[in-house]
Length: 566
Image (cartoon, rainbow, N blue to C red):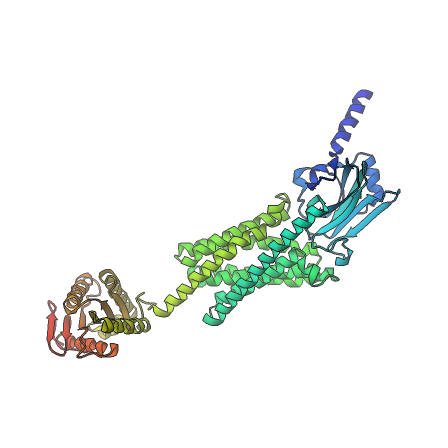
């Protein structure tokens, strides 16, 4: 019986003991978790003497991999590590806690003369409490030659509790920090440049999507600076309260403007009005979280905000899919870019709740996702620019080029044809008795007739020829490189196709005026258009449903079958 009891105690002691971490002058760095024994202090009142007594009693348990991230845990956690210097010279090493949003980080070591060294820091203490001025928590310790050093670390926080503990040689840590600083410089510099570019585009085109994207980038960049502890380090090192508030204010603001940008770039008002209303509700809830930050504890304020972040992620994915299904080209790049970013956010939020471990990927999920997001959302904005450009030159009802676009293109083509002595022809097309159609069958039916004619034009007219809606029921077809015979042939093809394809519906007929490049009668693009327009009026006067070509030295009319007198 006694032997069994001793064996059980020995097994318990073995479970409690974490492997000793051996170091020497060649040591570079090591993850501390495999070498930690942990103790949970639910009362949060245990001091170092009680912790040492608990270690002597074997109450510490070896750390598990799933204890890197513990979610929203109200307990204080004690960690104990034993370092053994196997070399012949003392070592100065640095303990690192890489999660900047930790309220209290306390570390105790032996001072080598029978006493104890205690370092107290954390993001609820002034930045000056840190022995090394850095946005993470870096605490130097000494390990005597040929001796062991016991390290006790106490961590307590109202937010997500993460054990990101590691041990570094000082020179190795300096190299790593220098590389990280360069990375952060590139990261925040990219945000600033993208925000400035989006702002300039907003000033130029006055499209809300660019303005919302610029504000989103600024608020997101500021939030990341607060989240990484950089704003605490450089902006308000003596105000821990402001450091906490900045996170609770900037996160909902960045999500608010991300929703604003998403609504604009995806066109939710037209694509999915119900999703538009959901977006407005989410934005209202996000704004409601801001005053909560001033009256509630960090723990009470961050938990509903974390839940809202997850809800926003789910909503934006659904909205992006709707945009893609609705055929919005920008939505494809939006979904790709935002999908990677939201995956990073999701990974981080799952880590926050303790459902994923705390490591480099989950800790920096925001930043990893942002790299792809910034590139692909910029492409989406480029697509948006093209859409805006097309909107300015496209007739919204028919999808053809509008009069403004025709005026610009035809003037350029006329000058090319004149300077190079090339052929150029122009058709002016008008729907017969269109006013009567509108008056008797309504404007909605008139719009459908216009769309039917534009569809036939798009099927019949082939590049380099181009069709435009000139205004009302009048259309034009520009034919670079074509002479009178080719123009009359195309006009007659259009006339017969319109009559045949609309016979069972709108029963449309068209009259077409034709003009070609004749330097004796058209010295300018405007004069050439006037000749084609005069030919159109001749077709109308001649009975409609016909094609007429009029030139200074000859005239030709091609009447349609069944043409009626005007």
